[in-house]
Image (tube, rainbow over all chains, first blue to last red; front, side, top):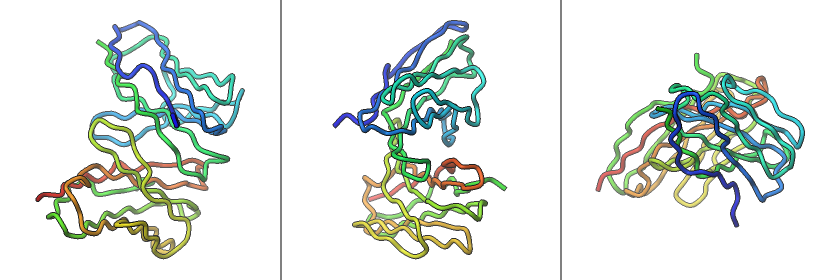
Length: 113
Length: 111
């Protein structure tokens, strides 16, 4: 049982480059989320989606974009990478509504140099 | 006041002891409460959910919720070195309509 799958696991980008972090889940969850976690800090919500075709901003959306064309996939796009975006990115999903526990992928460790 | 507050630790306990982790939250209409364990370099892993006042036990873990006092705690009995991790408290805030995470408490269990 795969759960939430994130790719890649590690990536180094140069300032100004762009990339897409992939996230897919096989639990048929409606809700999906993107978080970032800086060293020694908690999770900060970047974007979330309540279903295919619907996305909304979280706490720290600047510099990121998302799309949700299918229930399974929720990619996160960085258009112009900046050193401040160096972080660990986690994708999560939950069933039915926000009141349910979230299940996390293994994360993507991203460094911007 | 932070929405979900935890002592950052580290909380150091000897092997076999009870570890007590605490979390307070600010939104009085919060409905759901979760404890996640996060090993260094790994993703958060759900270990307990609690929705109503009182205690909920699962193996060596007990979650305690007191909505009137706005706190939730996690007790780990017979602590093992493998329990050494950061424990994240998460609260579903009805006011903000989202799950809010605390910064986590680092637990160190020493032999």
